Length: 504
Image (cartoon, rainbow, N blue to C red; front, top):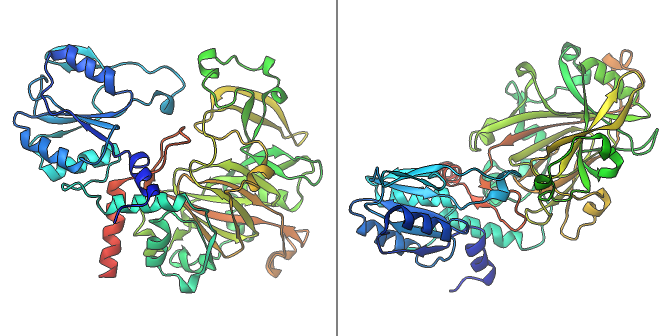
């Protein structure tokens, strides 16, 4: 049965599975190689087969990729390299995706002379088997083919994902006691579907092998820990929210006092009239910060974000889940008095967030639904004496990748937005590369009796969460709004193999 048009489009665009094949040896030495690169490398990946006896290898590769077109070329060149005996992979040139500066050319040795072309990104020996060479190409070019030309299991998984991304997202919910690790991995992580697990903290979060009960405001032993506190001005004095990592008009930051941005950088910004704001940073004891949360400032909002925890108080994802995920990259603490908005952004990690106290409301958008690009940065400056944050530090640097969305209300109202509320005790899984805006309202909490006298006033608001970032299982090119996620073969293969072993 033929595939649906959406899957056919995903095959051509998301997986980059196109192939135009050159069957004749490349003749003419360095000039011919330069011509080949000039013709194709701007639009295609190139695989150069520099093997003495490569006819069989070429035939197998042609058969494997016979149904693909226009993204990668396989070039046969058995005698044109000074050091033959390798298959070399040259990634498609993507100057806009990596740097705002013009790229520098590198010299590749060709036939004993230096030719100004990009260096090969990866090589594999001609002694490798056909299957090993095929896996090499699949890995580096985002392909998913078997020797007979059919998609492998990873390719099928990726097509299913892109079919799903063409339909409206839904905020799935499940109770922790009804959701197994197998179900979580197979139905959500591998399929890149966000889910809120009610009561997930008691099942999937541990501290020293037991359910996590730690609360920093109740643990006086941790109050001497040094923490980085982020500070932004309140939108409205006295009761307004604090907006973190948002965009604002450049004119609000007195451009005439800032450093000059070169024209060749400015013209490649997503929006040269806006800046991405970064919060001011203040270093203090955790105990001092907890005291500030109980008597919030009328002028600024203070927030612990991306805070790494000391090992003795570092919770862990339950081993049954963590052992089957890719490498853990970071464990972060998020603590505020609430009334904070973390504006639309994406993280290149598989994200498990556990809400310990308070509520977070996620607005989630799939990759490709928001315009991506570089923005100039500006950093608030905090005056400890006056307790205010000012717009005075305009930077020459740019954010790595972001969106120019300037209105949190517009993001919440986006027609493709998914809305998920995460309450105390819940867990949310958020796939890598998904855009998300997070609103954390204030919610009052009464301290335990043992701390009531020391922690005044008795009614105060804490919004406390922990999140765990794991290596992504799909990759995404940035900035490229139209580029879709592509499978990471090694990681996906490991997860799928582990799942099969558990099922067996």
